[in-house]
Structure formats: C-alpha cells, structure tokens
Figure: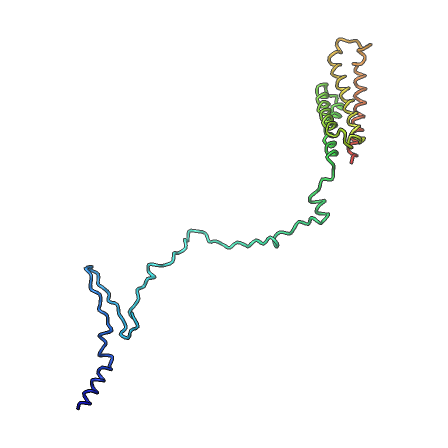
Length: 226
C-alpha cells in the first residue's frame, strides 16, 4: 500500500499539467483609461509570446507617385567614342579644304587691302568726279601707304617690286590731287599762259590719264604678288 502511494505521488509530480500555472505570467493591471488592455499570450512551454502581432503596415504605406508629373524617360547614354568621330587633322583634304589655313603672308594681306582703294580712285577718274571726292579717295590711300611704309621699313618686304610700286603711285596720286586743288583755287586769277598753264584743263586731264594707267599697272602687280 505504501509503495502504491509513493508511485502515485511520483506520477503526479512528473505530469506537466500540475505545474502549468507556474509558467503563466501575471496579466498586467488595467489602467485608468477606458480602453481595454490586451493581455499578451505566452507559451506555456517557454517559447515566449505566441499571440497575433499588430498590423503596422497601415501607418507605413509607401508614398504613391504623383500622377501630375510627366513620366521620366531614360535618355540615351552618350558615348563620345561612338557618337563623335575624331577630327582627321592628318588628312590633307580636311586641313586644306575644311580648315582653310591661311597661306598668304601678312604683307600680301596688307597689299590686298589696298585694292578697293585703288579701284575707288580709278572709278573717280573714269567718271570725272569732282575735286573734293577725288582728293578724299587719294588721301585715304596715301594714309594706308604711309602705314605700310612704317610697318615694313628696313624689312625684306621693303625691297619688293610691289612695295616700290605703291610708294611711287602714292607720290604721283598726291601730286595730281594737289594740282587739282590748286587749279580750283588759283584758276580764276591766272591766265592760261605762263604759270597759269599748269592749271589748264588739258594739262590736268593728261595727268589724270597718266595716273589712271599707273593705277591699273599697280593693281596687276598687287594681284600677282605672292
């Protein structure tokens, strides 16, 4: 009988249901708030909380894209090695035709700037322009020649035929311009004989013809200069 009682006691102690109350934690006390207190559920086998977790996704939804903004399209990536070809500077055709390098010297460029001035003087002679217009064209040409003379004085260009030609033409054109200006001033007071003969229309026209021929020759020399 004593053995039977001891055996029953051992079986009772080994049963987990006898100690289930020791694994449950005491529920939290209710607060003074009117909201009910949710009692967490714990596993009776020591695995912690086994209840239902709250849904936190309600307050953490991702922001939706603004439909008012235009859609952004991905632009084509630029690759300079594929989109732009290198400049063929080693190609003579590109250098000579596309780039058009200046093959003329500064001296030739300065001579070419005189061509329009000489053509204007020539036009005045051929169309019998008055003294004021003719002298204005000559004065502008002489100032340009003076600049070239100072620029290339003592340099190899000063020995060129074209350089000597424009200096001679400048002197001649200034003489004719002075003659025409004096004729306008003194002709009414001088006779056509003696000193007055220099201001005769025939003499002036003859000097203009000489100057015209010299201008045409100088234009040819300038155009042929290299």
